[in-house]
View 1 (cartoon, rainbow, N blue to C red):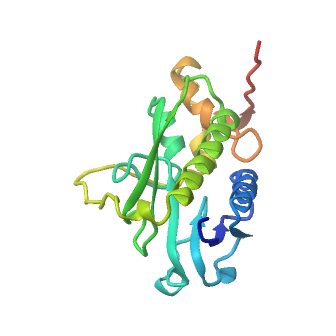
View 2: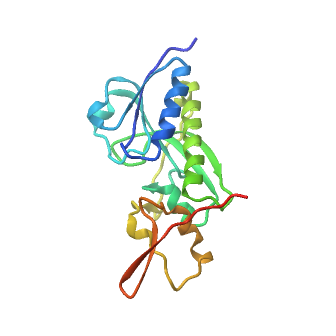
Length: 220
């Protein structure tokens, strides 16, 4: 029987990923591990593994030293596509195959050794709630695979190298949801796929007046 691990899952308090973090916690506990969910680096305690899943702050060396491994899941084929909101940016670029990378967190953003990768395949018709569901479940899957193969999976790591002129995604903000009234809906469909109807809905402006658009998919 494998040794029980002390695992902490850290995420932003209001992140959409928290529903899936609860699912991850339940699955890890069924594997006889001790698991805590937290939303602030102030609550990090000594343990074996800290999962950083949709946490927007970078931890200090002291905070990272509390656990043997600090693990991030990032929706890009690292070392390509570092930065923020990688899934949204790649969908906006028209990509339907996204790579999920599980790697070691360092003080430098998205720079640690890569332990696992997993492919996500989209049909191209998913709206934000659809692809978040896929991403959330795949995040649970890759974390469970890591734990089941821990610590052996640490040995077969891929060391990241710097890529000259590679894209570094910035954090998206509500202004990024603006629709260009001079382009067709079809031309901007990928933008509509990544807007959030409540948090950052699509909008357009005419004659200095702002109008909001909400999009829903009707499944047959």
